Image 1 (cartoon, rainbow, N blue to C red):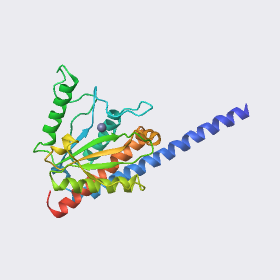
Image 2: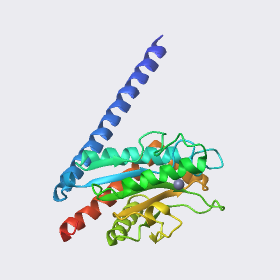
Image 3: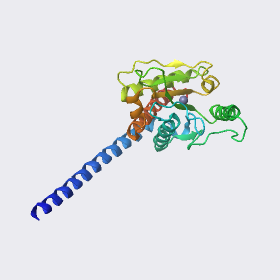
Image 4: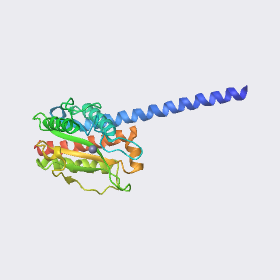
Length: 248
Ligand SMILES: [Zn+2]
């Protein structure tokens, strides 16, 4: 009986201990977020509108890993966290989708027509005069599994796109991928939306679904938050240097 009491006491003790540790961790996260919000003060966030485009959606799943992880869900999860962080700092945020539906006329008879309609509707938003920056979120896939790490593509039509891509690359490498030496890439005609966007615009391929270890990370809530936070910081750095240059 004494032994039973002792082990119940031990269980309660460890539950309380874990609760205290979790409480401290959340407090630390809160303090870090607050510090960041103060750091935002030099950026006129309330005047900046960011369009987030979580790639694919609905019947267009995008890339799929060997173990069945679908790109569209990861894109949306990272985008939703990014939206949350940006809004906490006062940015105005628009999204091309915030669930598993896509844009355009989805009653059209063929998949090609529905996709074209979706792309055109997304492009209209990309080129909206109310939008200051466009960030498109995707995941990569390759025939070989050894490749990993993010890569950032930028639109060729506004010089601020390249600056944004550079800030983004630095932020992701600095926070999450110190080994990543992949350079930013100017988008060609094969990336339709970037190639036809006139606002500052980038596409972030966050990682490779052809790499099992990276897929497991990308599919975890913790890494999705970290990736979103890195993208958020990259955007903030870009806005900070733009407002310092007064060229926004
Ligand atoms: Zn994609």
